[in-house]
Length: 330
Image (cartoon, rainbow, N blue to C red; front, side):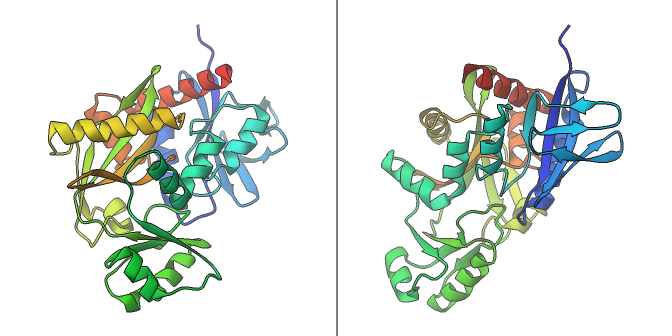
């Protein structure tokens, strides 16, 4: 009989995405098979790492990621990282768990660090021959010329934090005089700001994972926002239509799914990731790669898993088992 594995579900984080992180962790906790996994919720906010065990709170020993209660010492077989943004999606926790040799469910330190910086990730993808929007990176203290930005990228353009998600701090700018205020708004979330050409086209997104030993692209979702773009309200407050599977041609479906599988394979990804696209006349353009995508009740990956016939219990348990297998191969 298989022994029950101790699994830490980590939530919280140090960014505006904490509210989504908590919902993701709740959904994972609800759907995992508790006859196979003993799940312990751990909240990380800054330097406070607090575990909830039998309705009591205990500090996590960061030296070895264990919990000491009056009854037992708890160590973990795997960590399910449910923190969107820092420190769960930017490589910090991945590096920590690598040192402790504890398996985790996300891609590696290298891949989370790379993809968290949208500009660096898209620069690499372009070198790989994958289409991405034209972009421009601005750091705090850099000289900024709205005229030069408009000339290089055109208007409208998107201005967003380079290292953030859930559409916090993002603006669609249609006039030159809106560039500087939008940059300042984005600086409220991050010290780096990405400015991208606004591509007009249908927005689709596709999850991809290693499912039971094979790389699998999930059904594609088309996103139709009721707002100017797929912002926070559209993502999480119902101001959008999310159609899964997307009403697109088999040819486009095959092309998008081939791209996500290719990226997953060539970057040696692990875990569940989601890649967002804008469809253009000359093919799909990658917007960004999400290495800790939302897994809330209404999130896109659970919708795609359902359309693929994968129950959430299987999706989440597969993430744990694959993480343990990957650690054994390393």
